[in-house]
Length: 151
Image (cartoon, rainbow, N blue to C red; front, side, top):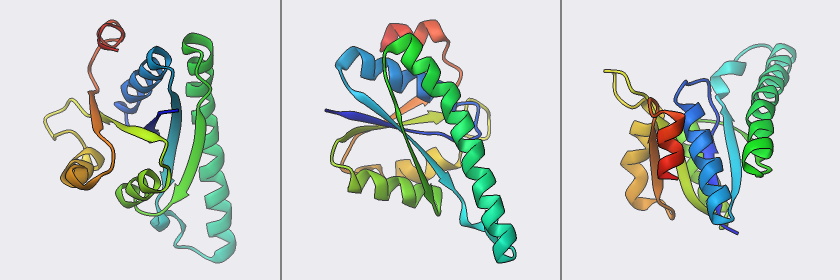
């Protein structure tokens, strides 16, 4: 089964990437894996404090994931899988794509502002030529109706 890998982060454009991945998976008989990466610099504290912060970050990610997962299950009939990794976001995404042969498409959300698509999209598009899967970049300002029309 082909999986759509979508990145869960704190960006606004993440929402459209989630919608796109779920709708494409539903229309093509695929699945969705949601990947969230915890940056290592969040835990440069005493060991006990770092462990507590890591646990809090995981709980925040899981709560955020449940919002998207409920929508995917209720509206699209897709039961997504959550993967949490620790490290630098772009390299962890690339590593995960390389480790999971069922991933068929990497879906990223692009910011709509004047500052560009965002650091993650910028970094990963530079590596796109060497990835074993295509990258779909979803504009963050597309309407739900437009997303439905193109998926």
